[in-house]
Structures are given as C-alpha cells and as structure tokens.
Image 1 (cartoon, rainbow, N blue to C red):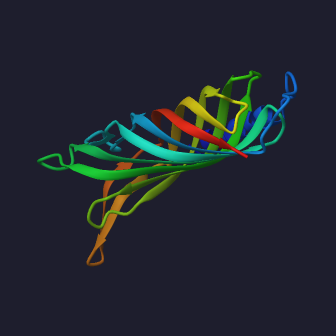
Image 2 (cartoon, rainbow, N blue to C red; image 1 turned 45 degrees about the vertical axis):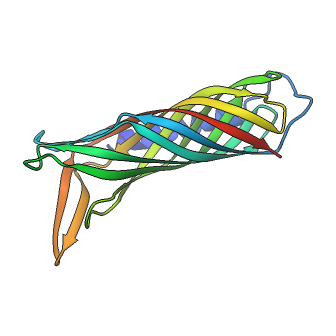
Length: 216
C-alpha cells in the first residue's frame, strides 16, 4: 500500500505539472484569470470489503454537488481547487441480521491542474487533482474517516471565452485505503468497536457533472 500510494502521488503530481506548464498550442485573444464553477452531479460506485470477506459496505448511487476554483497559469493551463460532496446510503451485508443502511456523506477536497485545448465558443479540457476523501457516517457514535485520493476527468467548456459559461464533465475518483484499516468506529461508555476492517485496496467512484462557470 505504501509503495502504491507513493507511486500514485508521484504520477498524479507529474501529470498536474505537465497539464499546467505545457506550452499553449496557440495564444487566445481573451483570457480570464479566475473561474468559479458550482456544479450538480450524479455519483456512482464505491464499496468497502471486510478483511476476511464476511461483510461488505456498498455506497448507493446518488446526486452530488460541489464547487471548483480555477486560477490561470497560462492561456491553456489552470490550477484547480475542487470540493465535492455526496449524501448517500451505504448498504451493509454480513454484519447484522437485518443488514441496515447507513446514511453516509462522502466529501472530496483536492488540488491540481486543468489543461484547456484551444477553441473559441467550446474548449475541451482534461484535469488531474489529488487530495483527501472524507467518509462521514451519519449514524450513532460512528466516527468519520479520511484517506488520500486522486481524480482524473475530462469534458468541455461551452461559451468558453465569455464571462458566463457552462462546464460539462465526467470524472473518476480513486481513494487509497490504508493497510488493515479499521473504519466507521464508535466509542460507547469507553468501549470501542469498528464496523469494518479492510485490507489495502482502492475505492473508485465515477461522477458525471454539469455546472455554471463565472469568469473574472
């Protein structure tokens, strides 16, 4: 896990550097320094498996929302700060007799870069970010957990050279879970217990999103 995590960090950091500092194919007549893009999305996938295979926590597909802050590095490269949040249910199996669902909030906070291809009213783009994922179960006495994560996405900006535009995108999030992690733990009257223990693995979610872009 440690080797895999370090390699992932290096690869994503290298990709972000290439995206930001790659020379522009052609200079644009008009550029904006800042972009703010609130968005609505639909997020799919994601599960935790118990260490010995006895149980499973599976995240249900649901809507999500978030906001992006982009800062121009050159005519084609941007720094990007991303915050995304999903409120969903997590189905449990193999833990309890009635296999209850847990209300779960999944949050991403990441930083990276975006490369915008040349265009006039429409500009395709790709983006790489890295940061943290926070899993916060809305369940009595269960604690939240945070792990390193990265994302890769691509899409198109419509009305890309005007102050108000539209951003359409698909993005994949990958979260690296620590070796032998105890997650969703509680402490009741001094006695601790954890819902699930997992081996080293990744949790992957796919998100399709649409948002407005405000440029300054």
